[in-house]
Amino acid sequence: MTLTTYLFLGFITAILGALPLGTTNVAVMNTTIKENIQSALKIAYTAAIAEVILVLVALYYNTKILKFIDHNIWVQYSIAVILLVVGAFLFFRKKDSRVIKKTLKISKQLLGFILGMVNPPVLIYWIIAISFLKKKMIYLDLSSEFTLLILFLVGVFFGKVVTLYGFGKFSHQLKLKIKHLTTKVNQIIGLFLAVVSIVQFVKLIYV
Image (cartoon, rainbow, N blue to C red):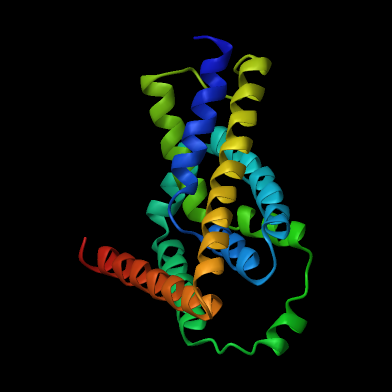
């Protein structure tokens, strides 16, 4: 395997993992709509750093984390409940949110890092993705050659940033065309998260 293979696979795998709508994507879209894409990129950069850390955690623990989640059903229920609460909040949220803004006043960089780190589905994705890559494509472990590991992580960083930038760019284009977009996007995202939560509950109960 060439050096560029590790860089490319890190880049593509990160893009695939970042495409499904999640909390970080939502934050980038909302920030772009309410402010601008430059502010949204502050979230994207630190979220990408958090993603790299999650990859390292996934490399270190790998199957142990999957076993923990499988044997602790409360973790899966907790994720479903959080998605439902956030979805309901976004869907029913009124346009005037001055009180919320005051209580949640943190920097964009810190917000991006927190959203990137506190993200169990992304961690699970990377555990599965790394297991697949190790079996089918490349040898990837913390004991891998340092240069190869760094190239893979660099690919992950830029893959995450590029994907989030794409979400921001898309939101910016919508902002130019649609009035009162913030409220509509919040409701659409809220509905989406609620549906994902309900699907998760159904899977936990009947599967």
